[in-house]
Length: 124
Image 1 (cartoon, rainbow, N blue to C red):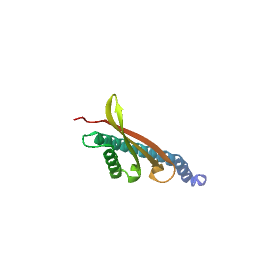
Image 2 (cartoon, rainbow, N blue to C red; image 1 turned 90 degrees about the horizontal axis):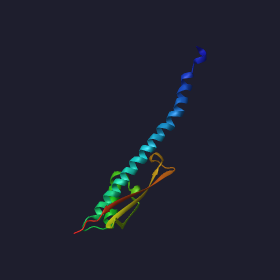
Image 3 (spheres, one colour; image 1 turned 180 degrees about the vertical axis):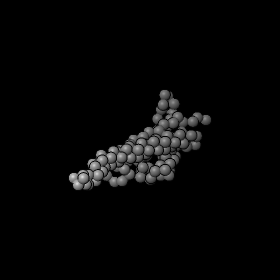
Image 4 (spheres, rainbow, N blue to C red; image 1 turned 120 degrees about the vertical axis):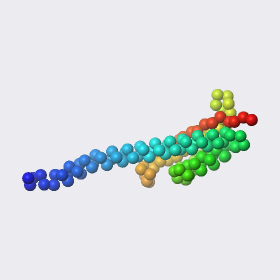
């Protein structure tokens, strides 16, 4: 009996050494996917807004920036560009967002994302 005293603590530490990195990795993947989906949605919304009558690319950038600042953080809305393009011969708008997702939402190494949204322009 005395030889097994304290073995539960060792077992607990050994299991934690495996579980903590696994849980941290799952959280990081979830954070990156959430940010990517949110940025993609904001870029698409900005492109659709810029493609409506009476609006231009600057309006799309402003709309995308407002969406990102409202949902995530203003730091994800720093590098946004919009440009007119052609899709299958039709005039369209493209909104591109570059964002960096830090490790677990903290400082440290970041994952860079580039997301694009497209929309065909409305005609009178």
